[in-house]
Length: 497
Image (cartoon, rainbow, N blue to C red):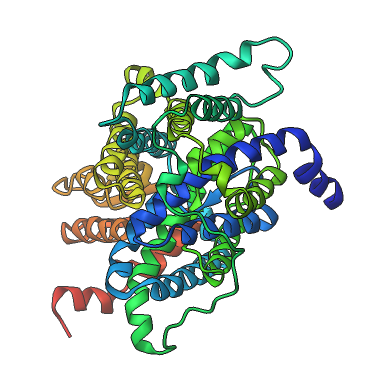
């Protein structure tokens, strides 16, 4: 069974994976260089990181076909560290980032993805699509008409090439776009920006480098405030991307294994002179749309990236940026959930608000963690509010026994506790009050406190109170935290000692 699974991951789609890996490798080069520039380091730091992270996650990652490398979200968090302390401290911070992520994997924090609602994922996807498009705008401003023509031509190739009989479906159109536009730019000797203009490509293979920083508490104080947010953002983006690739391929993945793989990959990258990275939604979508499905596509993309920048840099540097801009615009269009705009009319208002706020916060701050945090927080508040409305109390009076029975139905927790107390009539003169909890569930200390308050109020009015029908979980939390049947606790609360 394990052997079949390995074969499926590696060899079930060889041709598609190799072609898709080629497209991804070409698209990774300018991005890795750009992210290195954002972080304030040499281009080879991003390129070595992209090679190492892609190869390691291909082998041990939990999501086959997902592309991980140096990313803009991570690079933005490194700027101050590099500026104030230099490259060596960045390598040390990247190493610590990997350690934190590895620990997160062992603590199964990947399972926390179950708390992220569909609306948050949709907002995250739409925000990234917008950011990917916005990242292309500098390449389309203050440029000659040739760039616009090349970009438009590239988009035409990407969207129309698949309709060509026989070969249209067999070769990824983004790869055709890159090759054709590079050929045109070289033949016509167009004076437009190319990959070589982004920065100098490395001419040597990466070497093992232990960060040259003192191993003491002072170093930890410097790098920890950067490593923790790097680890959080890296895992968030990786796990969200894994969820999206799951949907695109209609398969499932091991999120905790992915956490561990991201940690080991970042540790490996830092020891080869690279910066910390994470999964890339844009490149992952390119890979899937180009036919990549297995681990081979990610492995080949990483290895080919290194081969191209070290041994074929003369040719790679000639690729026009317009070709890669066209590919990334295709990714942006393909990533955006266009159905989510139509669904604004049909989905509940709360779901739409969560999605829109996630988009706004991510685009405004360029920080994925903030957007996801706001989205999860809003979704949780809306859910708590919705559940509290399903709690109600019915009552009936038995004149013969002078007994009022209250039937509590629903979930009692912090948001429904006040409504629970409001459901009782404490001024009614009755001998016995029965609170029936057969169809209720108490979740937290706030709910138990509300029950205590209700019981003590009835007793103060002279009624005998009976609780019936508690389920095991409710009974446990009431016995542990409730005080209505503990005279010594009641005395403490009332002020007696």
